[in-house]
Length: 251
Image 1 (spheres, one colour):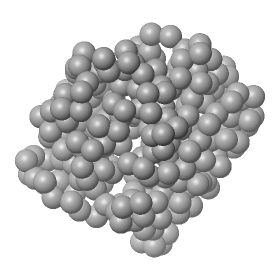
Image 2 (spheres, helix red, strand yellow):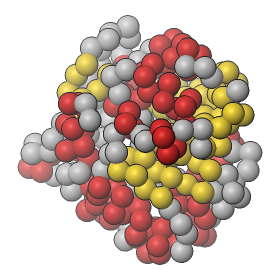
Image 3 (cartoon, rainbow, N blue to C red):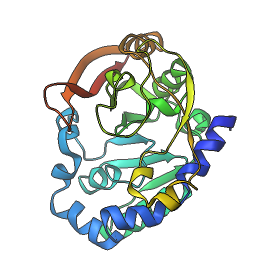
Image 4 (cartoon, rainbow, N blue to C red):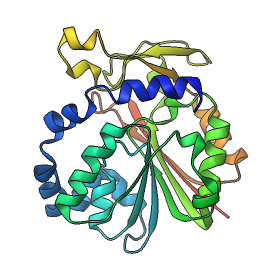
């Protein structure tokens, strides 16, 4: 595991289970909502799936299973790859309450067992701010490509690169020049929801943010055929972009 992944793991295992219970409810309560409206729980991402039943999905940095469990409810065969044991605990408890199968691999995504999972999945899916946890986007995209069967596709949704130059999404992360290649330390995603006394004690993550061209070129260079690049309004201001989604095929 690379050094910065060790650092990020410490951050994502600090009170994470307690946070998900507070934020999303007890596992049984979360499971009830997933069962009642799994497509709704997927939000806009449901538009990018052609089918669910029997589809093998790799949910990259799938966190607490907030999208993995609804996908499983809809019939997908989901494997979550995430660095946090706390995330796994919550996700598997939600899956058990929803009575669906969920495979959860706790690992550095850059060290996924490709002897086991290479050319295995129909869909590689990620959302909610993933790319900035990896310092080498070319290596990351090469791994994503290797996980897919021929004809599979990647659905990559993330924070818009405009968030480099301004705190558009109110995540309380520092702004920098758009073309900066700086690696920097910052708070983990949900630190701002904790009391200040706890917040000051929380381990910090190591980030590298990318430009639009860096992301698209990494997708193409890894072997993908780019199908779509959609931009989505920020939840804080619908007049400016806050997120994007890339759909790319592995031929």
